[in-house]
Length: 136
Image (cartoon, rainbow, N blue to C red; front, side):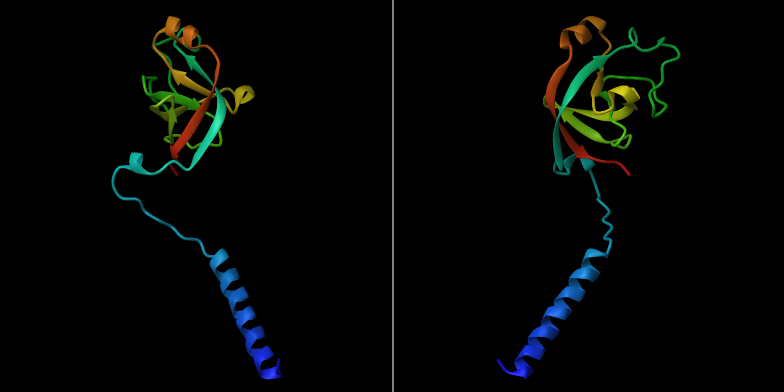
């Protein structure tokens, strides 16, 4: 190999390296238009999933979720690393993270259920939880 060829090759490698560094340090921001529920899943985890009701949490007239809303069907208490408003799928049903699990139970998902009997029958299960989208 001659010196000229080696110099060009070295310059190409350095240019590619610099481009790689610039690209890796560039932050891209995307705005998603339309229905966020159509965003493909980006993470599936295996987690303990339970149900909770008024009976085992609080008095119905005073009960509010971490997001400040009254509990209702379709709400789920999620681990703290997921933003409130995140949509997750459990057993084929979509739920919105509107509440938090107790800090000592972080990592668990707790589905709101109005029926204490159904909640007890659901029990404690290890299930796949698919995070469909995360709110900012």
